[in-house]
Picture 1: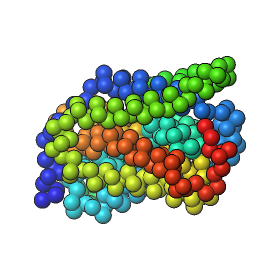
Picture 2 (picture 1 turned 135 degrees about the vertical axis):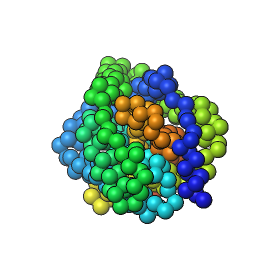
Picture 3 (picture 1 turned 30 degrees about the vertical axis):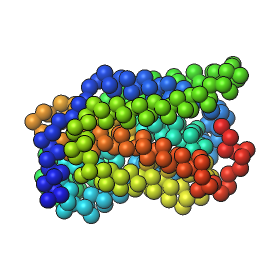
Length: 327
């Protein structure tokens, strides 16, 4: 019965347009400028000079998360529809989301590590996203659900899209923020707190906007997919946290890795799904679209919750002092 309900997703359509995508991009430029007001250039050198935390984060992102997503789908294959399972695999194949940079900053984690990790996984998306989707999607089709083969397409991530993300959404606002810190320190002090809570308001607004655009759709099926995305997102956060803990990295780095692995660029997944050169209109993919879209909503909610726990509670605070958490 659960499979039948999930299969109903394939008959539905979801609202998606490039205007909304561009608007979200502008919001993220604003958020990243706020993040940059708390960055310190010499910390970037520290990340690169002591790359263990970065290496652990990249391995968790590119290898461990896709592998465990495949295992999750394998364990649940009897209750998953083909497109929902492949949607989870697609999300895991995407790079980390820029949202994680703000969440790391808000959690008092190593924001410089988060920015570098996000930039590298984004630049690696033209290689790692198609490879991970092909490998783990192919194994799922071969051993668990042959019907999923209809959506096992060859992905092509545009280098222009990657350049836009790295330069426009990450690079330029960070450069402007660092210049503000350098030449207008008094302005920086006044802006930091304002930008922090304005960013939270923006994220809440994004969630409301995404839900309102597809309210009937989400309202009808959210009970079916919510637990799956919750479990998948929890796996990502746990993989980052456990991987960083096993690697004995500093607490601030662990927070960055946790949020970096647990927050995915599901927007890229939607762009790929609505690319008719990759997924022609006749291909049934409603389950993939719904899972990917709900991921985009849920990881903002979970990111705010987890970063809030890190920031306001004693959880994971061993090894931190007032001096080294201040932003």
